[in-house]
Every structure is written in C-alpha cells, then in structure tokens.
Length: 448
Image 1 (tube, rainbow, N blue to C red):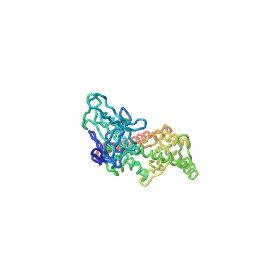
Image 2 (cartoon, one colour):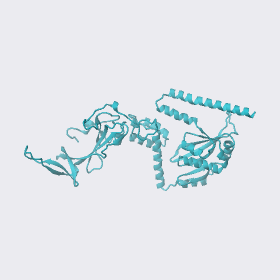
Image 3 (tube, rainbow, N blue to C red):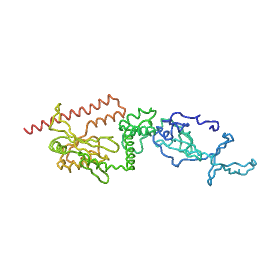
Image 4 (cartoon, rainbow, N blue to C red):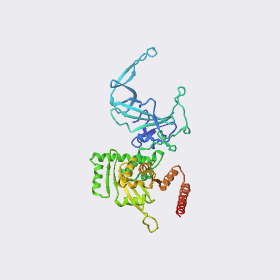
C-alpha cells in the first residue's frame, strides 16, 4: 500500500546486503530474504543495546471508504484501549496551554512497529536496525521490513559521526580460545539447511558435506559458506541426538538390540553396561592369542582407529596388528584384524574401558609394548591409562593430512604445501629409517 507517496518497493533491495559498513537503509522482502538471513551480514558479532528490549510503537491508519490511506497517527495504549491525541481548536495567542482530546480508535486499524537494534561488538558506534510492521490483530508481520546501518556517537555534544569502512573492525568470536582462531562470521540459515539436507537426506559424511555445500549454493559472502568443519560435525551430532530421541519415543532400546546381537553373533563376546556408558567387545580367541604372541612377546604395534559416520550415533573402534610369522608376495608382514568395540560415545572413559576389558580377557596384554593411534586425544589417553608401559606412536598420515589442511586454510598454494610437507615428512621418514638401521646394527654388535 502506498504511504505518503512512497511504495515499499521504492527502496526494495533484491539481494541480501552484506558487509555494509556505512550509512545505509533499504527495504527487504521477507518472502525472499528472511530476517534471520539478514542478520548474517558479514559484520561479525553483535550485542543488544544497553537499554535492552525492542522499542515498539503503535500507529493508527485512517482510511476512507475506498480504503485509501488518509493519515497515519501515533497512538497510545491505555486501559487496553488505543487512542490518539487531537488538539482542540482555540484562540491563537491566548497564552493558554493547548488542550487535547483522546480519540479512541478501533484495534483493527492499529499497526505495531517493532525495531530491533544491535550494536557491533567490536565497533560499538556501529548500529544495525531491523524494523518490522504488523497488524495488531495478526501474529505475523507484513512481508516487507526495513533494515538500516548507521554510525552513532555516544558523546552528548556530538549528535552523529560518519566513519568509513576502513575504521571497521571484524574480530574473533568472544568464546574463541585458540590463538589462531579465524574471524567470526555468522552463517546464513540457508547454509545450515543445506548441511542438514545433505546429512539426513543424502546421508553424506561431514567431510563431504563441508566440501560440497559451498559448491551447491552460489557464494556471495562469507555468511554463505560453512564456517569450518567443526560446524558440520556439530550439526551432525545435533541431528543424531534428535533421531535417537525419536527412536526412544517409538520404544526402540539400543541396549536390547546389543544383547540380542550378542546372542545371534558369536563374534560379539560381551556387553558392558554402566550408568554413563555401554558398549560391546568383539574378538575371537585367535586374535587374543596373536596379540600376546606378536604385541607382548614381539615388537608388533597394536594399531587402534575409530571409524566415523558408520551410522547415526554409533562408532566402531577396531584394531589391527602385524603378523610377524607370515610374509606376503612383496616380502612384508601382513596386517591382521584385532579386537573391536561398538560404542555410542567417543570419550576417554569409553576407550579406557575397552583397553581394560582386553586385560580382563587376557592379563598378559597389560605388557603390550607399542600402541599406535591417530590424532584422537581421547582415544590415546584412554588406552594409555591401561597400557601404561607401552610406547605410543602417532600416525604420520593423519599428521600430514592435518598439516596440509591447515596450510591450505591459510591460503598457501599447492606447490608450497607439497614442498613443506616433503621437507617435513620425507626427511622424518629417512631419519627414522636411519635410526632404525643404527639401532639394529648396535644391537647385533652387542650380541657379538
């Protein structure tokens, strides 16, 4: 509806305003750009104003018989009645104070204007405002809303100051603890919905979702990209908790399924249940005997790894060991599968119980000499709590992948990344082989 000669579409912005750090005002259509999407504006974190709340005003819209707008008046609420003040006609210049009459209006002609002010956390003079308008008797606001950006001065002498974008600072998140944490940008809700769709509907892994979301949606700003891989993992965990609750509401019991599987599968030997954890231990007698033979009496490494995204809310941690009594066609000792565990939590206590159960099954396993891990600290700490005399080994492949990801996230090109990784890990491997050769020669000379 045209108001005072202007249409909402006169100031309509077709695209979401992002990184606006100057005086700016426009109208947006909530059916195309939602208010939550407008809040993700690439300007970092915001805080509510010191006064708190959302300022609200009521307006009475007067119309004629053809529903044309005649006037808009500010009205007030008193005793559940809306009214506006109308000045009585009097003698001009009489020196008397003007007298106003309260004109009661119908609620169906009253509109509510709500303004939401947010102050930039790193630039307290920068204000972002979103104003919505709705009819008093309707719960949802009108489709058009107004957003504005402005610089203010907290001084009482100066009213308004104007700063350019060079003075604007985008800081890290207030809860960031890592010294190398990147700048915080709020993620657009359409990105979150795309992540949820890829995780639930297509069943892709977190790594695949993180790589594909940016390609699926045309990126026009930082808010239109996933913040980091952890955001996708958090979304996956949230969805798993929601699905688990739905299964419980339908009467599905995970513990009953575990006990039933132990009865039907000979490979599942035991189910451990306590107040916070329950898991299944899977092994064969041959596996336990080989661990004693090669990892306790020999120098084989017990390698432990946890698979991700096996299914919703369920992880499989499996092990393997080197069979020193066999050689393959290449002249190398083959890797054999070892005991495994199904678990619903991925914390230190779970891995500690898994290692403790292996010692309960065969007490000689307490003397395992070497244990290999990936970069999971909970796994390494929990296993080492039981195998306290073992030497820990970290997987260089996982370390190389982590360093490669970190270098690329810092903007390093592929040629430099390959050269840096070659300098680190090729030299490391050559040095490790040299030390192993020297140790074997020194041992053989001692025997002689």
